[in-house]
Image 1: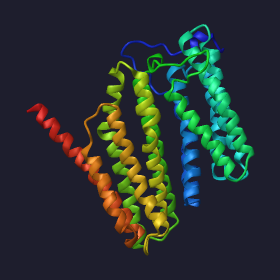
Image 2 (image 1 turned 120 degrees about the vertical axis):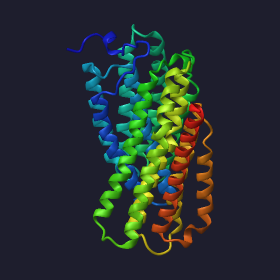
Image 3 (image 1 turned 90 degrees about the vertical axis):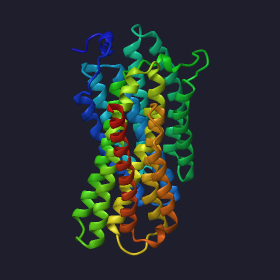
Image 4 (image 1 turned 60 degrees about the horizontal axis):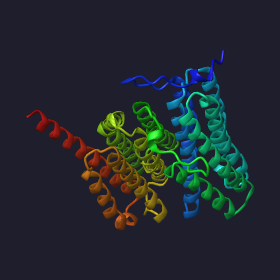
Length: 394
């Protein structure tokens, strides 16, 4: 039933795109819940410390997901052993997501153990699957496991700690997890990997990351709908509702109208797919997705209290979410050799202009102004593209 280990690797044929499988989409359902939990955690702890804690948990959730994206890029999810592991990872991911709201309280060890089980379990499976069948990638995962043993100690130590020590241990752990990729998982005696060693099927990874953006946008729609359903239809609520919807549509348009497809084509044709997978998708998608999560929190706050003057922390969230998103999308376009997005610079400048007057506006009006900025960026992108196509066909 389980077949040989050689059968677990994807067969790579020239110009063939590995479609995203149903088990991968099923796996992603856990992260719909995880993103929702992160949004609720930030909304409930809207402070500098709360933002740091939520940001750290967001990095852990993203890192657990993106490593699985790499995993299914190399191994075939249609094979039973891979599929069974995906289901086990789903269970650990569900525990991870359940633990988010109380990860810095009494669920710290649950969060840490779930994360370590996902990362180490997946990497050990890769060693088993690749041994004698892919020496280069097998050596790469020896390096990966070596580093994950170190960070596992930090994660568990953080889970057992209290007060600020948990934040320190987990901060060291996630920063190490992120930094070692940039140094090719350098390990004594084993050396380091290069991006040329990481043979990535570009279209598959691009599609997987685009689907994660959809997950994050879907979470924002979910939060908006749930919040509005519990409120009376006052003018302030209706303005905030329209702004939240317009903002979500604009963010979808900015990423999916041209950027995602153009980046995928660039990914497929690049001579160093590993480098693009690391830069444009593993790292650069972080601020982009974080921006969607923070924007969803801002929408929820504006809907809950649409009238009166905006508090400083609410204004910060309403402005920071779209700014993170535009900055992330700008970096994404540059990392995939797209033309420099001047519209994004204009959008970031407009958000900066809004900042000094944000405390004089109501949350609903500030939310509407921010949504109009995002809509302006999306519209200018569409107009520029139409003109570029007209010049190309002239």
